[in-house]
Length: 173
Image 1 (cartoon, rainbow, N blue to C red):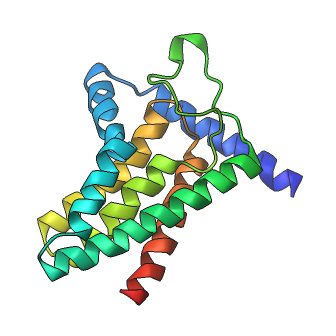
Image 2: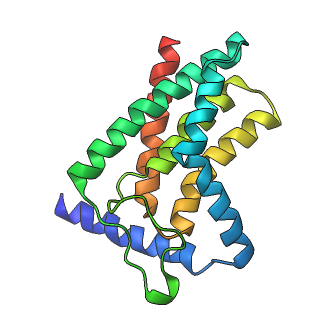
């Protein structure tokens, strides 16, 4: 198990460095904005608006998103405390571009939140609207690596958690 964790950590550090060295000012501005979509003050009101929408299709999507968001948030916090993986340590010149919400990194709550809402919208929509929702949900996770506050494996774990909860709650609603 230790060898697996060392392999993952090494790959994580290399992938994160690949994100960091490609930073550009326009990308930094965009990623700082995109990451805010996963903040509770944005994602919770959006989800509740969908859940209580008068259109039954949107309210069903909102219910899946709300339950997925709540459940994944709970699991994220339990795992963060259990695993206690520290945030990435970056060279001074390439530090974090935002201040992280807490000291633990695994899994990414923003990645889970973005996909917990983006995936149900994608599944219920057709065409470009659904694709935009999915891409935006995924970009929240990507932004966390770009900004230097999560390793790629943290983001992947958040996405997996969101995907499992969305599909599980989709079976119920």
